[in-house]
Every structure is written in C-alpha cells, then in structure tokens.
Amino acid sequence: MSCDGGYWPVIPVLEPRDRRREQLRESDEAQGTMAIEDYLLRTDPYRATTLTPPWPHPLAVVAAATKITQLVESHKADILDMVIDRGFSTEVHSFHLRVEDVIKPGYPMGDRPQTMLYLCWSGDAPVPANLDEAKDAVVELLASRGISGVRVELVFWYRSFRPSMFAIQPDDPAVPIYNAAKREILTLVKETLNGEWSLMSLVQLGRIKAISIPTIVVFVKPFASHDWADLVTKIKLKLRAAEAAAIDINVEFLPGHLSFLNAPGTSDFAVSCVYSMRADGVPTAGTSITGLAERGIGSLEPFVTLT
Figure 1 (cartoon, rainbow, N blue to C red):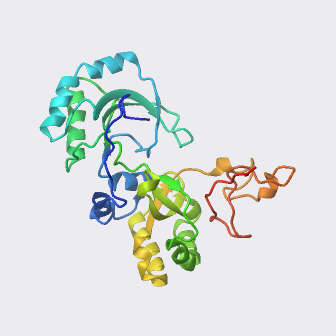
Figure 2: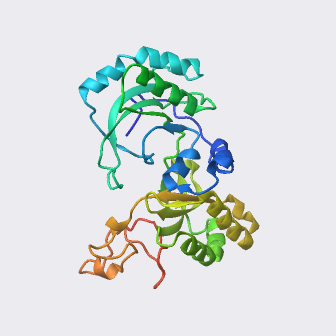
Figure 3: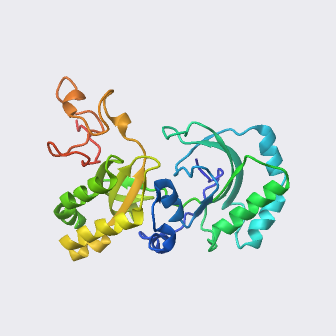
C-alpha cells in the first residue's frame, strides 16, 4: 500500500534513530506481556489504527465496495474539520483520505479483507502528539452517521515503522561486538521464546539504507506474546557485556513466517542448500549461509553470480 496519491511528496529528512519511538519503547506503554503486533503498534508514534488484529505494515490493498466508499467520502468535509481542529495538516500534496480493503497475505487470518478509512500523511507534515485522540474522534463521527464495519487508521507514511533490511558490511564495528555476544544472545532467545521464533541475524535496518543502523533482528511467529521490552533490555545487556560501544546496536522483533523459504515438508528451520542447489553445484538466489549445525542464524545477503 502506498499513500503518495500519485504525487511526488517532499520526503522528510529523518534521523537514523527516531527519538519519539525510542521514548515510547522505554515507556510504561511498552512494558509487560503482549502480542508482538500490539508491541509494534504501541511503540510507533506515527500510526494509530483500529485494525483488529493490528497487522504490521506493509499491507496489500484491494478495491473496497463502491457503496461504502461513497458513504464514507460523503462525510469527508466533517472528517477533515475534525483532524484540522486537532492540529493535523491537510495540504493536498501531503494528505490523502482513502477508503480501501486491506489484507495481509501469508498472515494468519490475513486473507480476510477489512474495510479501512485511511488518513495518510506522506510529506513532511508536522506530527501532533496524540494520534489516538484523533482516530477515536473519527470513529465516533462515523458511528454517529450510522457507518459501521469500517476500520480507521491515521499514519505518517514516511515516519511509521516500516523497516527494510540491508546487508551489513563485514568491517562494520557492530559485527565483532555481535559475534562476541551472539551465542549468549541465541541461548537467551531460545530459552525465552521457545519455538516462537525462526531466525536471528545482524543487519542494517531502516526505511531506506541511508538511515539504516546496525540491528539484531529476531523473526517471531505472528501473535507471539511476551514482554518484548524486557527481552530487548536483556539482549542489550549481553551486548554491553561484550563491548561498551554496543549501545549503538538496536534490537527489533519482526513477526512473520519464513517457512516458504524451506523445501516442502521440512521444519521451520533452514534446510541444507544440498537440497536446493542446482545440478552444477551453484546455490540458488537468496541462499543463506550459516555454520554447520547452527540453527536460527544466518546471513541475509543476496547471492549473485558474476559473469
């Protein structure tokens, strides 16, 4: 899903570390046991949604029914007045109001379309302190007009948590720090998450490569429930025991299945490339490399053949 509305918006200059998100990750809001989807939503100051469950971005979009779309859009003026009164900008090149059906392919229950009213900011618009208040006000407005079954989401597209992973360079200072603490972290993850995780790796994580930072990423099963903030703290303590400079390494948990990468009928863990290698002995594109007998860790670099 994209919120650019066909325009080329001004993309905000972002810092590698978002202070508002870091403050939320350290607040009481992020503490305690909760589903991973709730944790990611609670620690994202640029997204408020009534989507149930709150699927993480990205989401796929399908056309919503014409009747419900026209019904919601008939109240557009009132919706705009409501968000403007709460400090939101609605300039045409940065703000978009859309009614769409969203799905999350490959996610549990993700194939069931949910109708969503999107209030999306794609430019360098100011971000009010409280998105939930405006979201709740829009929900109440729709209900007062007899509109039900429509989810509401407010999102600042270029600031919300939608990370991409990039390969980390072998000479990055984070690599030896991670390697020194990797086995202890792996043991901690295994003991804490049991079978609710599938892979752990050090990558550059960020919306774009220019602002990506060294991050330990742990892929977990959808709806896995734990005290994620506490686990982040424990992992960082393992890193700091190895090197004081480890404070610059971030930790993230991302939900989703990786079983589609494996051969049919295999476990959720990586399988030997012996079973997927071509007859001429060349690994297939996307092959991950790890040490023999090590499970749940591996490189995420792409494999290419130079000719």
